[in-house]
Each structure stands twice: as structure tokens, then as C-alpha cells.
Image 1: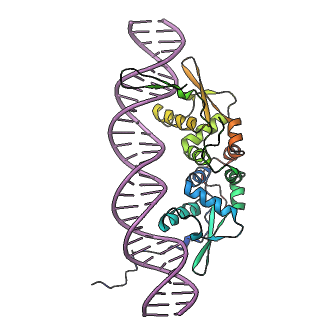
Image 2 (image 1 turned 180 degrees about the vertical axis):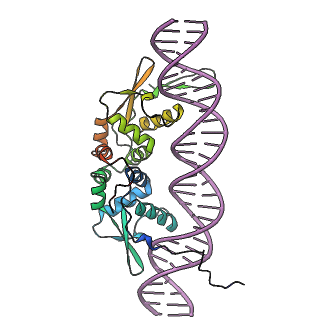
Image 3 (image 1 turned 30 degrees about the vertical axis):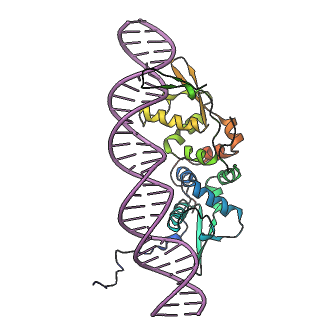
Length: 120
Length: 120
DNA sequence: GCTATCGTTCGACGTGGATCGTACATCATT
DNA sequence: AATGATGTACGATCCACGTCGAACGATAGC
């Protein structure tokens, strides 16, 4: 039954992941950073000099969920990916981010990771 | 403080709005700022030296919605209110915010208000 | 007292988003 | 080709959140 090659209207493969999105506006930027998982990803990326494969970050969520978060960060212009063999290396776009919203990344990374900051 | 005047099993009145909440953690802080209405409120508050009554800010949403946003900002420790007659004056907690997350408010306020920042 | 104004609370609604499982794509190796 | 590893697309589910209208609380002034 219908072994017709199911290309059209099925899963299309979108390579726009590789084209760098422009850095988004401040609201979208904050929204992208305002999720605990994504913030953790950004912190991890910031703490390593070299770009890292997606799978080496986080573990508390599924592959698909992780891919979703990477998409959000990509579309906000916060990260970029490049293919290397069978993997994709992810890196922070520090310079572009700094140009679009100076100081934001710095302050977010410097903030204590725990719960309340303890300032009343 | 912040107790509740219990009347007849219905609306309870919570005065904790006046007790300053501690500045929240970075995630909650970002979440509070990542809404267009709230961000606009914060910008408006930042642009005026004196504290302002709630009603003098924004108009694109209902009273109740506005009150909800103020609550979120209050509970994140971003703003504080004090009663003055029949109004409540709202002000940014710049110092506490700066102590809890240095540079964050500055960078957010300095960011262009429009859509995309235009950095590719 | 009554009335007006200002802000809050409650309840309900709709939408967006975070999560997952499954199926699929791509590349490398065997 | 077949298999394994890595990441993406899609569909479904669930829940948090932004929004509103209506009722209520607090204060000021008539």
C-alpha cells in the first residue's frame, strides 16, 4: 500500500537552522532567556570556550524538547550552529548579542544561579 | 505583616503589596520582564523621577490586567508601592535590583524599544 | 450616610508554550 | 545495505499565563 515516496508534505527538512537569525528585539530576547532550561543551556555554553554538540548539554529533558529549546534560542539570535560530521556544534553569539543589547548577557551570566537573590 | 482581613468568606484583602518582596532569582526576574506590557511599565517608571500612580501608566489593558502585571512585578521585587490617600504610588527598586543582578536593568532599559535590533 | 475614584480579587476563557513519543533525516562506519 | 548516533519535525497533551468583566475594599469628599 502506498509506497509512493512520501516526500511532499511530509517531513520537510529545513536548513535555515544554519543561517544565522538576526538578534531579536529585547522582549523576544528576554522571553528566550526566561526559561530555566534555556538559561541553563546558555550558561553551559558560556562556560566553555569551544562550541559543543547539542547532546552534551543538559539531560533533564528529552531530545525533542531540547531541540525545541535550541530552536527558540536560534531564532532569537542567541546561538548559532554549524554542522560537523554527524553532529552540530552550538555556540553563543556573544559579539552580536553584545551589539544588540549591551550588557544583557553579562549581567545574566553573572547573576547567582540559585533561587532568590536574597535582597529584600 | 501582610495579613489578611477576613470578612465574610469571600474577597480577602492582602496587604502584602506594601511589604517589599525580596528581589527574585534571575529566572523569575527575566520572566517578569519578558512581557511587553510589563516591560513598557518598567520603562515608563524608569523614565520618571517621581513615583507614579498606577492608573497613569499604560491604557491598552484593563484595570484588572494592569493590577495583575503590577503584582508580578511586585512579587519579583522589581517595583514597590506605597499608599498615598486613595492612590498607590509605584516606583522602581533600582538599588535593590542593581544589587541582586548588576547591569540587568540598565541593559534592558538601554535596549531599543522597537522590534528587531537589526543585528544579523 | 452616600457617591466617586482607585486598585484588588475572583472566576472564566483562550492561547501559547513546555513536554513527550514516535517517525524521519543525515552522516559515518561497518 | 544495514546499523548506530545525532538531531529535527510532527502531533498530542497539559498547564501556566494574559486577558477580561464583575464584584468588592479602601479612602476621600460631598
